[in-house]
Structure formats: structure tokens, C-alpha cells
Amino acid sequence: MVASNFLLGSDIMCNLSTVSILRWNLVMLLSTLFWFSCSTSDNNEESNGKEGDETNVSVYLQQNGFQNLNLVPDQNFVSYNVLVCKSTLLNGEISVRLKTWSDSELKAYNSNNGTNFQLLPEDLYQLEEMLTLKANEKQKSIEIQFHSSEIFSRWKREKTNYVLPLRLESASVSAQENKRNLLLTIDVQAAIVKLESISGEILLNQEKVEVDIKSYYDFSGTNQSTFHCTLSVAPEAVQLVNDYNAAHGTSYELLPDDSYTLGGLTYSAGNNQASTKLTIQSTKLHPTYYLLPLCLTNADSETVLIDKSVRILTLVRGYCNPIIAFSAPDPTVIRAQDGYFYLYGTENTRNVPIYRSKDLVNWEYKGTAFTDATRPTWGGDHNIWAPEIRYFNNHYVLYYSWAIWGDEWRSNVGVAVSDSPLGPFIDKGCLIDSKVIGVQNSIDQFFYEDNGKKYMFWGSFRGIYATELTDNGLEIKKKTDGTPVLKKRICGNRFEGTNIYKRGEYYYLFASIGTCCNGATSTYQTVVGRSKNVLGPYLDKTGRDMLYDYCEIIMSGNETWAGPGHNSILIQDDVGTDWIIYHGYKKKEAENGRYVLMDKLIWSNDGWPSVKSNAPSILEVAPYFQK
Image 1: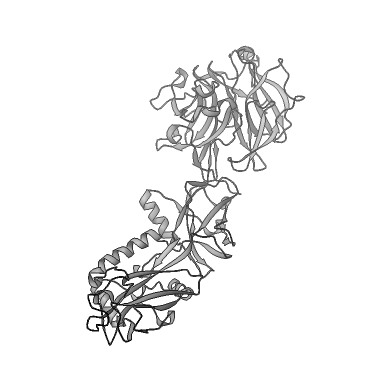
Image 2: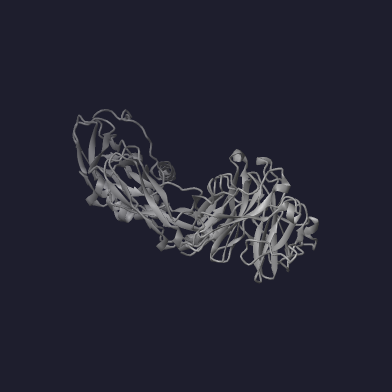
């Protein structure tokens, strides 16, 4: 509820509270009391004169000095009674006049007191100025009628500081100087509609995002009518965004006009709240932070005020980790020929889960790569770990680790193919046999093609090795004697989950160290080294070789996440940003397994990758992909 007082000056704001207005009125009252020297004596005040003694009789106003009149805009007329009193009874009648100050008198008062009052126009009130007190009447009232609804309407348009100043006069007796003036101020007790504040950042992680914009009807009573309010972008929106950025050291952008639609607010009788939808088409936005300053600009009710205070919404075209809140460890991602991204993970979901996404943020479970009937069977019953997906020779090729926990010499690499990223994948059998190739724990394979050659990197805490594949990618390329044309140890025993990415003149070998699978206490970390040759040597920043277990750590756990690692091949979006997708345990939900997470890779000036804070993010701007 707002009491909008005409004494507050022409710059009065619609959103002042009743308390603040009354406080100003009190200040104004105290500052002018010295001029009026008004007292608040009651009707029983008596003169020293005797009854019938006309030499000592006087008249005065019971209400004098500053007085307030509360007006409610939905009332047509409001009456105010002024009590005229005489100090003693007389034998005859007394005529008095309640006269409105002249413009020049009020102008002089404003000049002397630093105020800007204006006379309430005569058409907004009715006053019978003349009054006769009969011999036996010691007091009598004069009624003033105010056109309440018209005063409110005019005040809404003009914001004028109206006051009705009155002076008591009589030609036959004296008027008491300290009780002859009345300045009647007018408080408009009107409902005001306000926008609720919206705190926090609005995450734009769907194609269409709807945001509730809520408002409320601030008044002591219940809304009795139906009316509409206009919700708009603040006229000074561009300047507000610039000011915000200057104050906070940010570079946020104004949300583009063509990316959203904004509804109106409708209040129905009996309801003191109303809401509407801000609908945002996220696909029209590039990944960054945005601001949208909103305010109310109009109401189609003559009895309602609107609070024009601006509410600034903060929006981010982004996402929150995890991107898949289901256990799908050791993820691998490919952008398929149909334009979708497909993600495959270790079979915590039996037969290798497949997820699909348009934007790397919103994923839909689509089934499994194998069925119980089509899953591999060679070498007996095993688990399918750490799949790696590629597309070449018009086929989707799925490399997988065919493993038994604790039996490292029976943990091998297999391969399957399909015409579709959704499968069914047809198993082609063993590609790397631990015993045959002589590498214990032959799992965590990674396919990389360079200069027309197809390579397979693999290994887990028993060295990372490389070999060359045949052109179809389904067999190890061998010499005439049946031995591999290439078998080279690349890294020491500290690493697993190899991943290679070429940027500029360097090849970057990402890997994981530590314990992968101990829930909230997992120590897994993501590390990197680089080389100018795909086959190494891969070095850390000081030139030490990963073959001897040196590396640069780029990501570790934090208070929320444990064991971030075993990343997929890096994905570059359409604006050239690289994204790393990996798994990790959410500490408070570790029993649910390893979720899938994603972070933006940041490249330093000297060509080394990192992620923000060297740990999984909570909120990040999203990758950008054109339709």
C-alpha cells in the first residue's frame, strides 16, 4: 500500500512506502510549526472573558496547523468537517468566513519555507465559506467535500503537490492568531502493483525456456476489480546494462529483442497476485551472460498505481553439471552424420548405453549398442568397459574393452561395427589380446588417425602403448612374420584412459591418474602432456617425459565432485571452443555411480589446456552449435 502525499514535491515516486511518506510529513510539520505556533487544545478551552462580554470573545479552528486527509481513489466524494469554535457565548450571532489562501500568499509561503505547494483547484472540492454561529452555539462545523476519484486521476497525470490552505476570518470578532490557519494535506491511499524480485541466474539450457514473472497487489484490502498491467523492457535498458557492467566488472549483453516474448499481467477480482511468462528461444542466442531490465509501465485501472522500479534479470545461455545424471562412466562422444551427438559409456547399463543430444547439454537415452543376443561372447563372459566410437569407411566403429576386474591378462580390446550410431553393432571379435601382444591390462583403447595412418593407443596402469591398424581399422597391422609393425610404449605406469587431440603444431595426450572407482573418495585426476609427434615423446611444461610418469594436472575433485577423469575425445563447437566430457562422482550421491560432466577447455597463450578452477564447474556457458 502506498500513501502518496502531495507535500512531497513534484519528484514524488510511485513506489514510496506509507511509512516514508508519513516521515516526510512529520518533517514538514515540524519545519512550519514555528510559523503557525499552533496548539492542539480541545473544545473545552475557555476564555477569561465572561459570558456575553463581547470585548473578550474570539473564534478559532479546532483543527488547525497541518492536518491530513486520507483519500481512497475508488470513492467519488470524501467529506472533511472543520470545527469553528468561539471562546464564549454571546447574546448575538457571529458571522465567520473560512477563506482559501490566494496564490500570492501560498507563493510567499513557498519562498519562505523552500516548499513547492500548489493550491488544490477549486473544481476538485466544494466549500461553503460562510458560517453563522448563533448566540447559543459555541461551535459549528463547515463541511468540505473532495472529489476523491478526480483528485487521484489528476495527481496520476500531473504529480502536483496540492494543498488546501484555509484561514478563519470574522468582521465582528477577532480570530485567534495561533488557531486561525489550517493547511490540509491529502494522502492518497491507493493500491500499487509491484514486480517481485528475481534472484539468481536464469539458466537457458533448453530450446525454449519459460520464466515466471510475478507481481503483487500491495494494499491493505483485497483487489475488487479486473484490470491489466503492461510489462515492458525498461526504456533505458541499454544504459542500465552498461552501468551494471561498469559496476560489476562484467561484459554481459542485453537480451536481444528477437529472442523472447513477454506477456502481460492480468488481475482478476479477489486476487492480489498475477504472473506472466517470459518465453526465451535459447537457440537464437550465443553462449554468454545476458541482462534483461523489466518494469511495469501502465495499468488500465484509474484506481491503481504501478511501481516503475526496474527488475534486472540475469540469464546465462549455459548448463549445470552433470549433463547426464546417471552412471555412464568412461564416456565417448561422436557427432554423427545426422548432426546429432551420440554418447556411449561403460556398461553400468548393460550392453553399453547410448545417449543422443543436439547441443551436448540435453541428452536423451536411446537404448544400448548391444543386446544380450548380440553382445560379444569371445573369451567367455566379460564386462564391456570404456567404449570408443569412430566413423570411417561409411561405418560406425565401436572399440571396446572386454574386461574382467582383477584378471588383467584376460582383459582385451574388441571391435564392432554398425551402419547407424544407434546400432545394432555387429561384433567383429578381438582386436588386441593382452597375452598375444604382451601388454598386461590391455584396456582403455583410443583410436587416432594421422597422416593417413590409423593408430590405436591403449593401456591401464601397466604402460600406455601404441600400434598401427589396418586401413579398415579392424585389425592390427602386422609384418610378414605376424608381429605388429608398430608396438611402442608412450607413457609409464601412472596412466590410463588415453585421449589424443591435435592443436596447432602439438599433439596433446590426455590421460587419468589415481583411483577411478572408489566413490566419494576417488582420487582420479585428468592430466596432459604434449608432443610434436603423435608417437611422442609427450612432455610436461618443464620437458619431463610422460614415459617416466611426469605430467601436468588440469583437473581434480572439489567439495562437490570426486574423481573427474577418463575424458572423451574433445569436441569443438561452431565458434571454436573446445569441450571436454568426462565422468565423476557427485560426493553426496556417490552411490549412484559416475555421472557425465562437461567443461570448457581453456588454452593459455603458451598452448597449455586447463579448466576453470582446475575442477568440475557448477554453472558454465553452453557450447554453441548452429542449427
